Amino acid sequence: MKAENVDILIIGAGPSGSVAAGYLQKQGAKIKVVEKQKFPRIVVGESLIPRVMDHFYEAGLFEALDSYGFEKKPGARFIRGKEICIFDFSNKFGEGWDWTWQIPRADFDKAMTDELQRKGVDIAFETEVTNVEFYGTDSVTTIKDKNGKVSQIHAKFVIDCSGYGRVLPRILKLESPSKLDPHSAIFTHVKDINRPDGVEGTQISFDIIETEVWLWVIPFSNGNTSIGIVGPTDYIDKLSATGNPEEAIKNAIKLSDFYVKRFDKLPFEFDPIHLKNYSVAVSQFYGEGYALTGNSTEFLDPVFSSGVCFATESGILAAKLALKQINGEDVNWEKEYTEYMKYGIDVFTTYVKEWYTGNLQELFYHQPENPDVKRKICAVLAGYVWNKENTFVAKHHNIIKNMAYMIRETKKDSN
Image: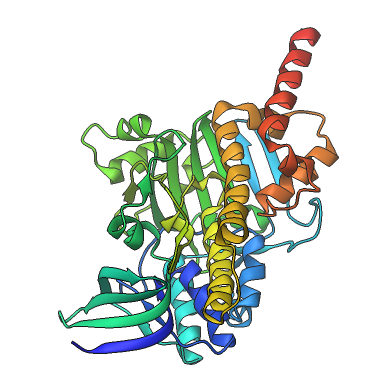
């Protein structure tokens, strides 16, 4: 059987795999990327947050991506009936990027991999990993291409960036239940022919239908807009009596007083995609010759657009540590990788949970606004969840529920 030798094998060519590949290519490592699908392909994760820009820049991808003219995202709007809460990334606690992009992922991921291939990165599309065997830190990965041809890759390290494919978690039996309650989503794109002029037309928004149910609206620079409904799985299932995703999202749009006129009756650009019980986790983030990144480790919830951020954060960090290891340097994967990544995931998990309890929504819509509180929460929403100088990071476990409790008690007293 034909065998190929590389320093580092990357499984998956999405954002996590692309930033890992971009970084390693800049460092002169011999790498190969294996991707099961053919690009472009439709996938969720179309709203980025500013922290990801650090990763695209470090991976040498920013300049190419910026040339595509993707819609700029300077913040985010949260709508609850007649209440509006807008976060401006330029008015946040601490340092960091003030903007990011809203992107059709099919175009965005293709743009990344096109740039990587232009730079000489070896990417094998429509190629499936069928088995991986580890011999210490060395590994032998068996792959099968679209024509059924089987070959092997010998690598000194494997970075699994396979996202929902979760290649190594399945092969090595590392999958674990999520700590979050089961939620589901349905999304599609429309030609946004009723789009208003100016900021209103391009503003990314989250329209709260009920405390645990919300509609996302993500306008793109190509004139299309992504629309998705998110909520507890049983709620999403009941949006269509027949279980039809198209009927479900049409009914969801009718529930939005804010957006029903803009989107009702518009045809969908593709059949709506139903993501059921999407939150996932793993029992470990690394092993002797591998690391898991992005959705291969954990996926929380789309409410704060953290998915791509954790994908790129873990992708570029795993690449750095893997390169150090194959170069003979000592790497403490538990401390430098697992503990680091879990801290950020833990912060965002708190925010997701407190969103669905309603506690975080109390802080969002409380009047008059507290500028200091808003700036610190904004920094979290921008993805800077490792900055422990921010009390809304360092004390995330208790600060939201305690402040929400005080707000409710104050309301009682005033009544």
